[in-house]
Length: 296
Ligand SMILES: [Fe+2]
Ligand SMILES: [Fe+2]
Image 1 (tube, rainbow, N blue to C red):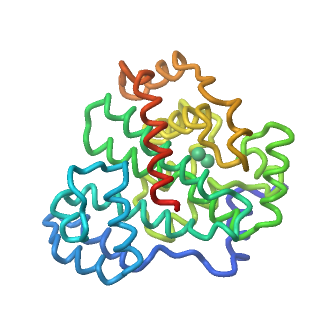
Image 2: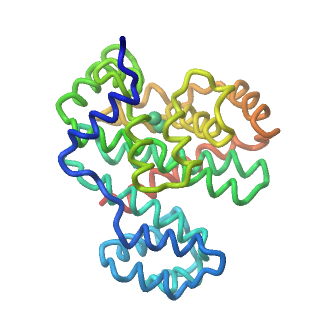
């Protein structure tokens, strides 16, 4: 009898030396922001209790990703200018950066992982915006940021095997999910979903994390399918974690079948992506500038 990827993922998780955690201030702030009458003063107090996170939020707010007219220098001002939804999004992004900010312990290059995560977040938000539902558009961004969280954690926790995954992926032209299945018998999708459950992320994001590499795209939940497509688009423009050097990624730039992607989007929720192709180069630039501004 073969062991299922989910069972293998559970036993791999048991071997993790320290289970990665989402900062306490972040999970408390996320709870507060989910309440019907958001008390922004209380949210600010929680965030200010964690200096590292407060500093990270200020940096994010002033990065090209948000491009406000004036420089924001305090968490309280950020909350007033941006409102709860944006702040929620920034907290989640900060958590992701926090979790992945230990580049020396992973064979993956974190700058590329961040580019991939931001890229998928921005592209998913753009695609979703054509559908016209603001709440779904925000979810798309958050899901994009989080979808590969398992990859970062797996690469940090099982460095030697993950180095083999990278060699295999580069030599045989596999994607990381396929190479992980060969090496581990499970993948970052399963590991990420188990972690997201432990962190009590909303179920809609757990589904994206678990199913974004499934073979049957027509059976995916709409948000998961959207992230799947944003993932494909980002890989084709070179936002991919599996390479070490920029020149290794150059050959993949813009080899994109937009007609097929358009058809799949129509099937999701009648989304029509009028000017998407024209807006893609600017988005790619924005991702690079954002990652540069927070990475150094
Ligand atoms: Fe993935
Ligand atoms: Fe991905």
